[in-house]
Image 1 (spheres, one colour):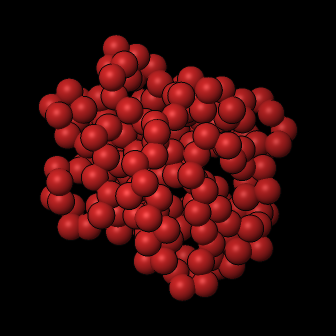
Image 2 (cartoon, rainbow, N blue to C red):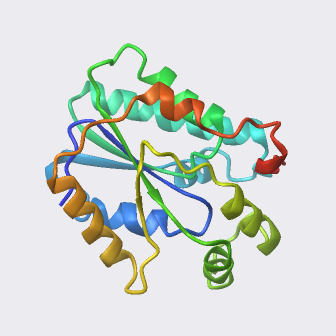
Length: 196
């Protein structure tokens, strides 16, 4: 069981299995007072009719980070789950926590190959603005960080990934430098990120 006294970010490219991993890490939801914030779920609640443009995406990230900030101020731990490929998305979190300097931050990146991401995408039954080409491109361009703990993929599924994370967590890993992590994101104008 992972119960951070701070913020744990579960990130990675689309169709890497981030949501499944984050949900398993916080199951049952009340364990240790950890609050799971899924940015895409919050996005759907706030902007159900959005075409998922850049401005709306950033509004969802900003709202998630404001919620994470309020949760931390109440002394609860947070698991944030979303892609976090973009420099602006990462910087939004760092800015939200600017005056909570004692809040430690850890980042887990769920790795997936481009072929694996496309295969997982084909098995989805939820509405999305992605297609196979975009899923492949985003898996190829994801800015993995040396500061993060990278896991997956696992032939045995998300439970095995959570077991890897739990083993890592038992070693009491040091928090990362939030600013260095934020600066490693892809800017919106970068062609490798294929902005919409």
